[in-house]
Length: 211
Image 1 (cartoon, helix red, strand yellow):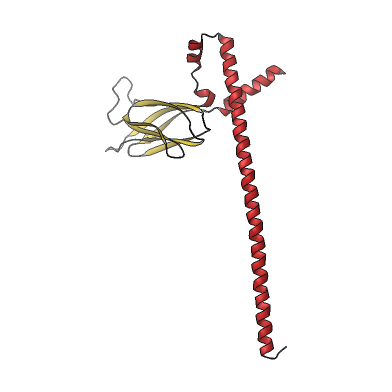
Image 2: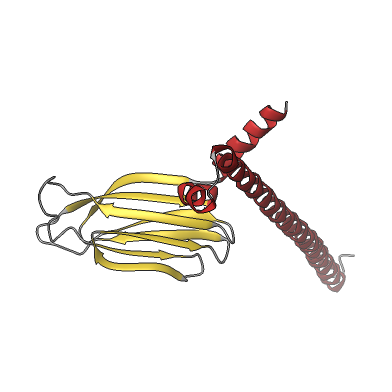
């Protein structure tokens, strides 16, 4: 039973920690952005490189990239101009969507670049081989360290989700309260207009001596 719980915890940890490795094409003169949702204090690492279209030959001069990584608040965490490859690593200061944008300079004729991009966050961003080497730990201790960090990540993620749920509940309560007041206001206006119409018609008929 304990082993089953540990297995579930490990699986959840890997689901909560993202590891995005992809290859995509980018035409010269165009920009492509990739967004990653991160929580505060989460570690992230990324590596990118332009794929050489002709193996064994030097990379063409046209195959250069300009890369910028920014937070949802516009803070820049990485910038590289006209490079063939690069990497970045930082801890997220604020929670939200982080965006990695790739731009290829315009060329005539137009060229198409193929880019390899590996982006990891959370537990997946930790270099466990370095941890094992620096700590001089055996395999079992290393697995325990991984498990501990995974459980910690799950706990932090659950706390974050609970906070978001409380914020949504507060927003729903405030919205319902405003809608209730708006409904009462609309009803009051409708009744007032109906009353004024009734008074106007009564006065009109009295002047015409129809009542």
